[in-house]
Image (cartoon, rainbow, N blue to C red):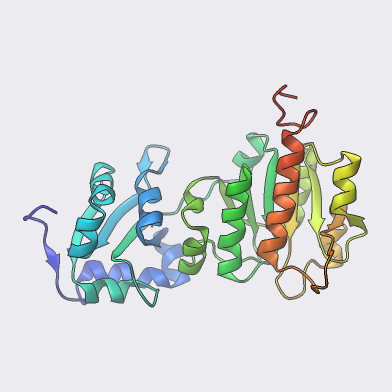
Amino acid sequence: MSPATPELISPRSSRVLAARRLAKRNFRGKERLFLAEGPQAVREAAGHRSGDAATLVELFATLEAAERYADIVGAARDAGARVHLAAEQVIADISTTVTPQGLVGVCRFLDTPFEEVLAARPRLVALLANVRDPGNAGTVLRCADAAGAEAVVLTDASVDVYNPKAVRASVGSLFHLPVAVGVPVEQAVGALRGAGVRVLAADGAGDRDLDEELDKGTMGGPTAWVFGNEAWGLPEETRALTDAVVRVPIHGKAESLNLATAAAVCLYASARAQRAPGGCRSVTGN
């Protein structure tokens, strides 16, 4: 850190107070800013841009974290972010975690208009319908990123993707792929189907079996998976909008899979089928 960098000793600093308010959804929406905590999230934020604008606008770091993660602090400065050397108490006051890691970034919203998602002709999409738990939303986003999905869509009834817990659970994946928010489920499903994307509802009571669909070779085309609420799944009216309702087979004695695990299974099944010969991501380019 530069000797000229001021240390924010007081948690009552105006900069600190402004950052702390971003833990609340109404302030995030008003300012169109959110918090990214920890080295992984801050590293990804520092390297991300939306158009001509850098995503990371401000970074708070303890002296220890600034020394340990000097490369991240340097990347933040290179991105044009204001960097503040902060007392540990300041970081604790801004952070929403029990054991802060010494780095907290303030980032611009980065959601993508749903129309742009469609225009990119995505081949694999995760659609979260009425998902309320931020940890689950962030974990599904991470799974979608790992499986190579081109986009994640959160319906208007789903949790705020900028909730600090959702951002942490995404482990940086929020900065890797387009995320559209606030889209009515009927609009999302209808537009995806209209764009030639097969829309599948993931539901434990589905009348189609994921293994059988893979065996039949029906999973190789552009696909969007719809994942529902953690407690009650997908309502009948949402399932009726889709092309098929597919269940993940339970071969053992477990009653069911949780949302994030089921999402990982479904997304990876599609990713594998799309990369197989004849799939839409095969080496032949079909």
